[in-house]
Length: 289
Image (cartoon, rainbow, N blue to C red; front, side, top):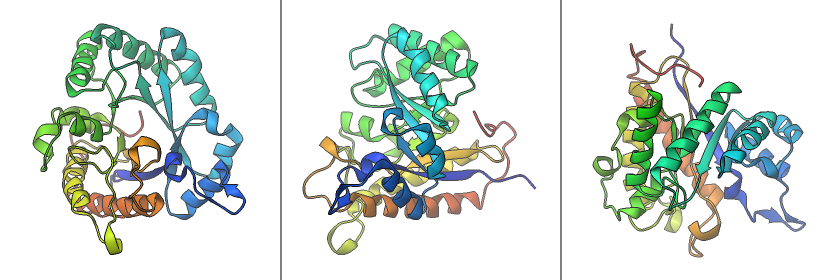
């Protein structure tokens, strides 16, 4: 019997920024222990946050995020990720005003070196990068595919294009421009959003689900169903139910860690529902890179 695809739940270290006790903020190993005990399979972070030994000791999957600027960044940054024992890498590439020509060139360099060192790398759709708008995102994807003859693997965080376009729910028709690229991806940042806020809480008054989260989950549910259509046996999705501090977090929001555990539960429920109807696709994406 074919091994079924699997969703790997990842918690961002950014979710626990500022969390701690009487002795101050928890250390990274302490945060990782809480992430593990909460039932997550892994975590999102950056190589400067911890050592390779701390990664190994965590017993968690490490999905690493790194910035990428000039061509001189490619080899040392991806090599550092490899040396930290990461399972996959999420690249936030260049700047909001980078030309498509430069973005395509850098993406080709990134993916070429990733192939050389056998590293699973994706380019993230993210604010203040060369994928800041949907137009720039798909121009990069099309330019890369024209040059390389294969599609570009991307990390999807749909909160950014939703806010850029000030969308109203339901979101699928406007956001799922390239379902094929969504199926190719194995990294998703499931941060609840609406058309005016890149991060909205899952839990509201009395611990009830917010209406905004319910709207978001309709899109997330369709995204999971779409992904499974091309998921080959044993394929893994690394899914981060993201709620982080900084500018994303408003003072009236609740406990971020409770929120991500709630998002995780609903993503798991949705994934299992669609997995019941899964059969190995004839032309699906294989396990691994």
